[in-house]
Length: 216
Ligand code: DX5
Ligand code: ZN
Image 1: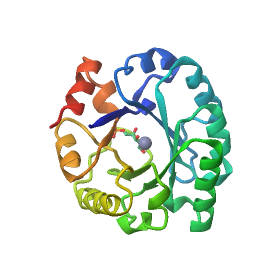
Image 2: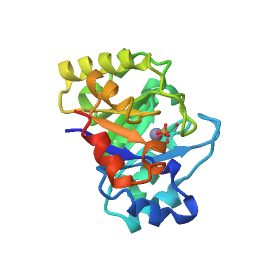
Image 3: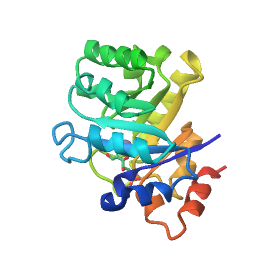
């Protein structure tokens, strides 16, 4: 089954509760945390996740685009995240492993994220313990960018690794997912689709979510 994760990066932050309710038919709520260092943009932090947790029962899929995420995973877990994604490029492998261990101790689901430059094989040291792998199909930092077609190969390779080592692991794709690109990423092996502008820019948001979910 395909799951849809609307990204609140495309929501109106002054009306966040209203905009979260608009996507309640989706499967996950994708929360983009950016620190102005790992990526050039700054978005939201722990207090906002805590407030979001109070206004929705949706599964909070928190994408940490921050340097040295091991410093923050416990705080985001306590704030109410259901799953945390840490970027493999954001710290040394031992510290990524430490971040995953803290997630396990805190009882949140564990994911690693790959920038477009990172090879699929980079997930191998962690794959047996992961709940999800997130493959970026844009350079992280901003919503509304063009989908990178050459990332379809990375999605295929990650899907093959998942099937071999941990078939229960989910494969999320993030960046430029829209009605044209959704069938491509699903065909390549994704089962969770993040969509910011394609959902929040739609005239009928529930219909846009349903259309993305039913790509095949
Ligand atoms: C980009 C973020 C994405 C972004 C996706 O760095 O991680 O989640 O919101 O936005 P769209 O769907 O508009 O490309
Ligand atoms: Zn994201």
